[in-house]
Amino acid sequence: MVTRREALATTAAVASGAMLLGRASSAAANQSEPTPPGWGRSYSGGPPDAPAQAPGLPGRDYTPAITPNGTALPFKIVEGVKVFHLTAEEVLHEFAPGLKAKCWGYNGRVHGPTIEAVEGDRVSIYVTNRLIAPTSVHWHGVFLPNGMDGVAGLTQAVIKPGETFKYEFTLRQHGTFMYHSHHDEMTQMALGMMGMLVIHPRRPTAAYRVDRDFALLLSEWHIKPGAERPDPNKMNDFNVLTLNAKAFPGTAPLVCKKGDRVRIRLGNLSAMDHHPIHLHGHFFKVVATEGGQIPQAAQAPASTVLVPVGSTRDVEFIADAPGDWALHCHMTHHVMNQMGHDIPNLIGLKAGDLDQKLRRLLPGYMTMGQDGMGEMGEMGMAAPKNSIPMVGDRGPFGYITMGGMFTIVKVRDGLADTNADPGWYAHPPGTVASKALADELKRDGIDA
Ligand SMILES: [Cu+2]
Image (cartoon, helix red, strand yellow):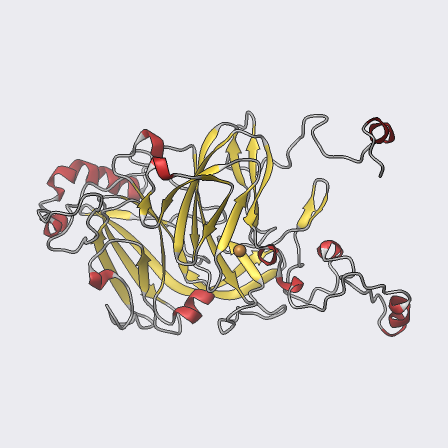
């Protein structure tokens, strides 16, 4: 079956030679201004503008990125221009099983779908506002005419409820970018109004090609247990930390075949926190920021990358170690869900017969936290309606005491389908940490 998009795409490909004579011709180039060595031009205004090229197509010009728990924004091609449509609206969003909240997003999703395009594409992005408040959209990190930058009041009028605005510009860079509301940011971004924007190179080098290309947007929320909406007025004490707006165990795993070259595009639009994202079992190289590609000689190896607020970091690695590898923010409070914050410190407390006494008044009462939080999620103690446990989920060896900004990179040998969760890793015999045997303790002189 030929979809409308494919039909348009075919037409566009056939017509691409004539395209510059059409609508995109006003974007014809005047790039005679010299730029200092090592600096590309930032301006893509029109006219003068960057020359638009034939729209880049998935499969032919790029391998689409994967947005775990998300999706790509569909487009159509009209007269050589790639046309997208975002609708800002309220969305009932599930962060993890047990926690839903009324958020603001785009096209029925929180966060919005990933916009994907190719360097040289002329893009037209329509934004319809179905919120109760005015809004605007900023294309974060993208070179464009000043009036397309989306800063309400500064470079454009607000998009009032019911109105549709059009943004149009030619993409003249590649990399990982983001889009977000730029009107009443404190409220609108805290409610979820953001998404990823991936621009592929027009002529990808061998180094650019990867087998798996993931996009993860980091953000943070304050949702009082039981509340129906995130609270945008909180300046700290964020209690739901998310990857693509999901908190573990709501996060989808990143599934790879052994030996895959993998890219993870990390963007951070949290209100107040930078996130050091740590990958287990591998090292990666930080290959790009929202400012562009990092020269190969400067791509430092690491297993943790700090993603500052308002930034993107692309990391690449070879998934050569089969297993279930944690990928998470290393701030310990960012891998803790709602209930773990701001409770009295009871570490080391001897509850004694306190529990028994209190149970006479409160049947089922149990003092929590005297040996930490590990058991709390598992026991599901006293979780108010519409809230998620402080920590994680049941794993193959017991409870995983991590929640929030946590997911699993699942690397498998001989995997047929990387789109399905392959389940838990089957460890080769003798490769799992286990209780030491008496003769081992004796042999190695361990006085336990
Ligand atoms: Cu963090």
